[in-house]
Length: 457
Ligand code: BGC
Image 1: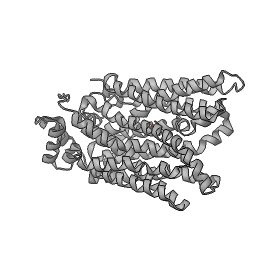
Image 2: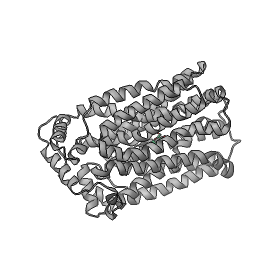
Image 3: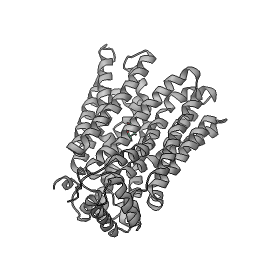
Image 4: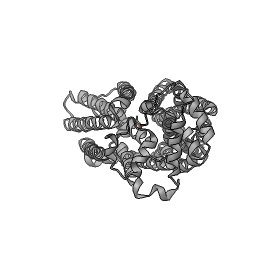
């Protein structure tokens, strides 16, 4: 009933590309620290505790940003919040680049973190609300491609600037995409769904006409009006039994996306490679860049498939790949003296990242941008995002201790077990949103149907 002709998504390409700069900054600013910290540690003679504070200040800031950002995007609109976030990114980039003291640097990294926290969900939210139904998966996961590319660019910039100990430049360069995001978003329209849901129907209609390239958007406007008329848009609604399944799906996937260990690989890959017997630091760093590239390429595969095969098959296949690769990785570490170990370790690490990139990586951010009602979409997404960043912090703080207590085999098996849990969770609860309009998805919850029935027409 909802699938309309998608006349001219060209404008959506531009808008998605600009807002995905938010995703790129998310990836760049989280990845860049791995190289920068080596020099910061020396220049400021940091104690190990202070070093940890510098590294985790971004994640702390991201949690703050995610907490505050939800209500703000619902109240003031998606676009203006993205413009302000770009300003914060730029302020953080310049501030950290110029930092005369360590306190200044930490405050700068918290500011960058706040921007990341807001951008991590507002960029997919904005893209989801402007995309045509049949291409929404593709457009939203474009943000994940920007994110994973941002991580690789950060690795390369770190590599290129390490000869001159250029940590200030490593941070400062982020000002360029920040400026592009801010200036670009000034020229982009507000989300038509947000406009209509806030009673600005005529404005919303004209934006829709512009981005769909046709005057015939009345059906879509009517759908949005009907659906937002049934919502109060406050906390009570968020905790209502009808929305409970959607909240459980979002928060559950947020936690599983992190506790299955992805960022131990993203943040510690060189260490893992070295402990598997790849001794040369430069080969380990090269292998890490390889991991980053696989992350990007497999996200491209996901992008091409999400609107064809659907969200669930990719999620479940990716999770199965994660279970297998973590089992192999853990087992490889049982035999530290075998020379083949390093190839098993490297191969299974690549399979693990590739499996994440084809499933849980993009699908989590995509689903939370689709499954909540328009009036509280920002708030609900921000709650899932806070859970995601909280779990990220937990894993970062416990990984090295876990390795000491359980050993490497035990640690990777633990992530493997949690991936089995994630597979079961996704199998039972993940909805199939392919080909459904956002209004259709809201109607599904109001009819008190089980999430899994969503894919069944
Ligand atoms: C996750 C990040 C992770 C990245 C890796 C994202 O979907 O939320 O925590 O670093 O994927 O590609």
